[in-house]
Length: 464
Image (cartoon, rainbow, N blue to C red):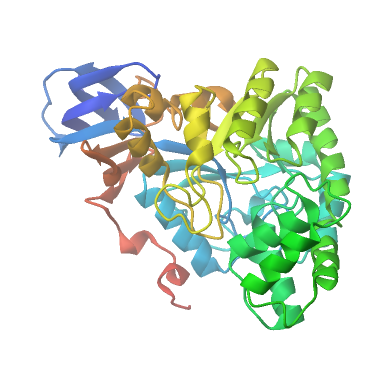
């Protein structure tokens, strides 16, 4: 017998999130916060139902983004930097929701659970959780590079207490700030160069200079001075700074937290094995070999190699390390970064190589200085290029995430009876275009728009 009042989605193509099931035409029925029926074909709608007509659209589980930054009001990034402005946090949250994400794991790692929503009295429709990387070495690495957002409460917090208080995973162990990655390219190195020369540089210029000095593996003892001289001349910096001074500046900017951050890897892996808890690691050229060794040392650790398409890899390196990690039971995550549509700093070579090698387990956004592209835009590209079937591509951000992160998403990620009612309706010819979002049984986005009345005042640039 049908409930008197419920929501039913009709006439859409149904992709359940399990990696294989697709109904060309079907129905999803929701009662309260739960899915109560998923069926192919047409069935009785029932009296009293709220009907959402998905004609011309595809119905999928809500996207679960298990590697994101900038969506809570506490210390930002693994550098423990000052919190982002509330108006920016709200903007990022809204972008995720409007892009079909209904569950998000903020992996900055050093915030506290009471900082997820800060002082806001309104809960965002996006279900946001956080991770913990509160170990001695990870905290020391953050302080070595920045630590400007860390209070005594953050410095004395520890993983076990954070898990007890609701953290859903460990990590992110390491980060672009502490391991010479993307955040060094778009934030720390440009700031250091501008302070020294007065000249702003693009992140790609910062990356090239960094690699000329330190190499892609951060293992170069002596800079490649001919290459560095050429880069300084091309960037208009040669008249302001010589190559020896620049090499010293880069080394002093990038290297102080690196050894500490790598020690933090061991601490997080040991905690993952001890607690039987998922642990997210920064995967890039300086850390890939360390991750392989950790997987051997801690075979029961639940390791997720984050953003395995990191731009410090060449495409063949990303695949080679991906194969080695998969052999050792490591889950392989790739991130959209800004490489799908924006391409401010990155391109698609590495993500394409990993997807085509069938190495990818999960798909996330990470953070590219605020310019991350949506998960559904990446899925649309995979399907259009015939890299994956539609069900397999959708599973990367739904059912697979639920399986790898059950503590975060064990009750969602599938269009299945009894699961949490997180449902997204997208245009079938362009999966990146989100029409409607149901979050925990509530219609949070309708025809691409959120209800303004549900947003905190600072989301609109207002003050109370």
